[in-house]
Image (tube, rainbow, N blue to C red):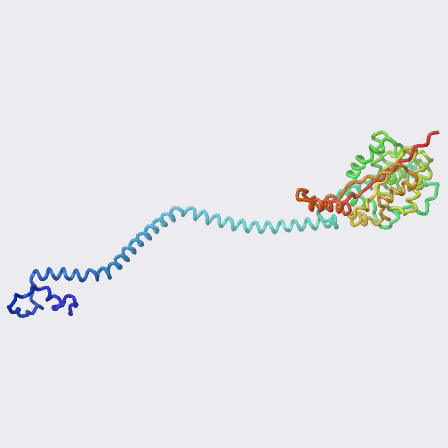
Length: 427
């Protein structure tokens, strides 16, 4: 074994006491087997420590620190494992509950998918049913269509009862005064087209569907016209239908006469105890005495006639009304473009749109005084929104433009011309 250079005999010889002057150095002994003196061993230990300590510090100190760090980490890992094992043991029931909930959620998801499929099938069946009832609108219009069918059945039932009564009277001895009479005056060549003149076209059913609920139409007419006409009897209702407005006038004590060319509706109105002539407007007015009527009313009639017929109708009305009498005609408003593109062209029996200014001119030309126009039912659902004026002059200009567009595009859908006959000159 070779000693390190630091503890070799040559290096340690310097640790021995120096020989006295003039003396002979002792012979070098074989120190491989002989024990070193105690002092020498002590000094050797100190020397070894002095030499080995830096080596130990350089080599072993990092290893010791690494071992200590590793031990601390192992201890920390052990503590964390113990903590996790404790939490795992504490959360074992919760894990079971979560597993059960997860299974329930999965089952509910499957059930939801099945229910959605069943619900979709039900919706498809409803859509098919709606299209079978109301082909144009589907389920959204089914209720209205069923109401129309119910009303048509009731109307047919009333007509059948009237026919049964007529047959019974004929069998008992002939027709009575309750039956409609044939006008003695021939119908002019410009007679307006009747619903029955168009083969295969059910105008009564068409009007029920597209003009609106009859009860709502009657409510609007009560509000607009009963106060206006109440003090002007007798009132002639041109195109009176089943006589709803005449009934409303009778409730306030105003006499009324209906003019209705459609036989079924005229019969229904008579069945309600109303006076109704089954003829057209011009034929009826020709038979009336001049100055004998208090008011002449028509709702959605004038747009169905030719110009020559309309001119004669207005001139006859002017001559048959007494002084102060009223001519009242409601018609679609073509000045609102939504009307032309929607309700007006929808009706195939319309002849021409009548601009409000044209109707006012025709009434003035026929001799009426104090001609006024009233506008109703703006298409507000289409209106462009107003702009906040606080945003400045540009916003005000935009808002003004929007208002003009709303008037032109989506303005009043109906208007009424109200023309009054002038008072007779004082004698």
